[in-house]
Length: 569
Image (cartoon, rainbow, N blue to C red):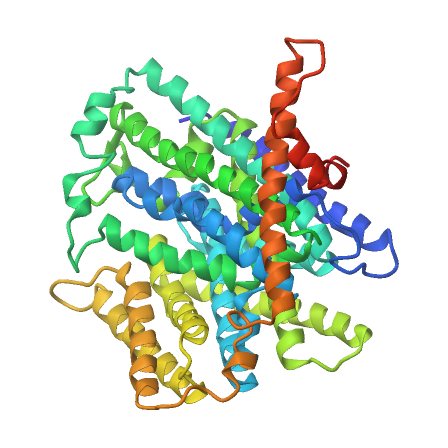
């Protein structure tokens, strides 16, 4: 462990980071007297892609995913990578559909397919879920920061909860959506730098103590085990993880306002598709980096003298427990990395928390305005936005303080179980409205009630205070979706005739010929845009070796389609 004499340097750098974030928000706030709208000027698609990733990432992912690799194996990596192979579905189906119908998410179909009361009910649950998620994203980094202070009392966690929460709420209050996107863009680089630096120091430190033994890593089952593919209600398995994470991914990228609000940042659907591709690429490499980090932490502390990994996956130093798996990343950053480098690494954790919280607070204000306060002027909307951000942030801080007092334990399964309460019934109702002609509002309410009940019962039997075997939390989204859809389909099947004016009410399937043509045109735009980019790439590469002009066989086809004139600018 490094000398604690110079820890004040790390705290100074962290305080400087908070000051810079707050100063940037104040400057951006008062540079213009009025709030520019989110779509007043287009944001570069790469910036939007980085912001989408920063919004989906949080302190829960930053700390719990490496902690999962440290304590168990890489099984949950399959679930984290679901967005990578679902991105083509989003690009070639959902985005053209959103563009042709001038909507932002599947959530907007609910009021037209069913009625406004169901949409407002789901919006209310969305607000509760986001406040809960924000409270966890405040609690986890505050808990990690409090553990690195060697004190006999736990009072520091309450102080850090207030500091992290207040700073994040203030800069969310001072920023509009466009400014939040740019801040998220820069915070993504801080996250990448933090992880890269930590992994590099781990590799060097493990090499010094001869800990990089991959045969031991495989033999200990820290990568994958044969039991990961077996079905069991009491433990997670890769097939169930894939199903549950696909449900969460459809919800996040199709219904959740904090991510879908990025789709209107660019007017052209091809630019938004490029943003989603950028997000998919970043997710792939960062998921691998997160799990490599957790595995390297296991190999480092297993061979480091004075340290011992206990059977309950806690870390002991000289016989005294110093941290659990959720805080192993923070412990290494603070106690092992050199002075100054520790602060830079911890800033990445704070950036991961703040980027997600700011987007969630902004989405809460948008949901309130568009679902509960429709007929209001712009001045009132600005006041409501600021008020909703402040109140939601205060509630989240109070809930975080309650978590600190109760001590909720392992964060990752707790977050998966609670997120399944909302995402699974929500996706079930949306899919029901898309593909069922007979389901009406009553069927949707019955499905929602039964789905929430099944999720709650499953959560009860997954809790450790019940004796005996426990159902794994990963089953909550799957069982919630199945129960919601099944009950609604059963009740709707008793009806012979479809919903009245179904052709007009289900706008996501039965839209008119003009919209169908625009849907196909946007799909073709995405296709030819990608093909033309490939053409430009190969042409530039070939001209590096051959100075004369090069002819491509498909050039005339691109010229006839006017792709060059349309996209070269």
